[in-house]
Length: 399
Image (tube, rainbow, N blue to C red; front, side, top):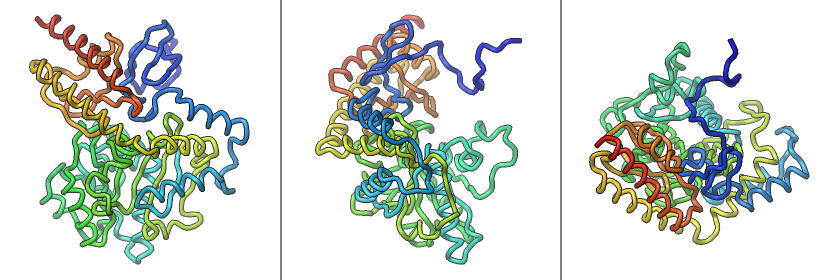
């Protein structure tokens, strides 16, 4: 029997092959145009084939691809300096993906307590509905049964508590607790935002118990919510600053880049030999990461993201009001937005795709919308028209 593809069958993919991208648009092999409101799941932060990123990658590719972490990489030092200057962090470990960044964060938290003479402190408290990656450790951290099934015993050291249950959180903290790991906005979990006062409360709780606050900003970071990082909405003077933070996706603008950021105190025990990576922080990745920051850190860029977010939130609210039989509510921050559906979200996603607009599913039956941060107001209005056509098609089909 001959398989239709030799690739692992781990994705349910529509029969579309994209061959080119430019800005907010993708073009398939048949010449059809799609408006991309997935951004490769919050990855293509500056859209497709952004000229500055293309130039940076081409220039680096013509110079040096890889040397390994046995040697210093100038671009890596530069990107680390810039990330630390713009955030709470003093140290950075570069990876290739968000899951690797979370693995580094988990190891850093455990090593921190080990170095303080508390090797029993290995437990990381996480929250139901979370998604932290697909490695054995990160599926255990996420705790979702559908991702754990069939992969043997759940990796120890992770305790889930219900989202928003403060009593359960306090009760879960004990002598073996190393830290609390949370997404400021649950992306896969249904675009569920953690209230700002709760993030500040987590900082106070961790300080009280001598444990570490760890943020997963893989999806929410690098401008996606209208701040450089989502936790900054809870205060830009450190009121909700983490000890450790994992990032990826948007920092590479489409190139595989991730990073674990940490304070000097949290990172201090991560000495020679405690962790490593072959490809993380290589010259190609660092050239692109620096190019992304060139744009995102420009004066006025994040203000523009926030302004366009208001436009898009208004569009989505109007859709919910117009189609109450199909949509229930809107949610999210910045350009990490969603609409909770009253019919299967996959039906709405398919209808949008039929009209030439790409969206992505999230938990809690949410249609997730993640446009490039450079999308224009005209393009947002075009997206609205495509969504209206898709919703009208569903309504007509059901009538």
